[in-house]
Image (tube, rainbow, N blue to C red; front, side):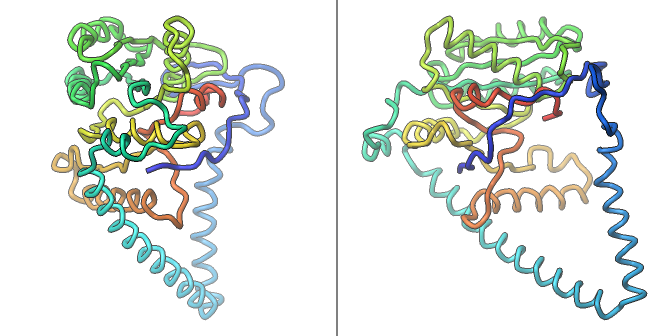
Length: 324
């Protein structure tokens, strides 16, 4: 499933200085007219204002508020109905795609402007900070079982310099799994870089720039054949995910203007969390699949997704002053 690119990054960066994990202060001249803390509080204030305003209007204008409530309820019911239909569509598509032999489909239906099947390369960036070794072990073990991982997949462990022993951890994992992939690299995102926060977005941007220099500038890989996947450290991919992704990237005429996003399912630790959270996770899983499957909604990539290195490079990589 894919999402249209909504816009390109302007390349602008805020001038801040990293002061620890997830924290920053403003630097440079002139300072912002409104502090970041005030701006962060606006959504919460608006929520409280809306709640109090609704209560007051319910007392002063009960009939008007009842009419508004009916309209909102009807709108919500329609959205839930559409989401339910789209969720069924998404589940059917998953079942259909699980049965497809993507290489055979490519041989039968690839358009003239498709990339050669064997030319597609995958770069998987895994940003992580103080992740337990067993989590990274599981992630890499499952990635090693993906389609032709030894020939097609390059792993980039994106470590944070703020984590003590991060280099030793990365070297240990490289020793264990280096032979399972075409290439296995790790990067270390430094602390205190101007205009950056210590966060997933800045870390993966650092890793992506490094791997572009390594694969394209040094080793001579064509940039247009490289598909970059970013993920959470504990993401578990469908066993045929990169097999399907190879086909989708190779045949799409606008492959450098697309994101590819698999449906996210929050079921990995479903029995280890609070029962109420299980309901929330099940709801989120169904709704996100619906947004991806519905032709009447525009999906947005989140958490774990893929895009071409060409698109990533031309748009200036990820914003280094945002958390994710």
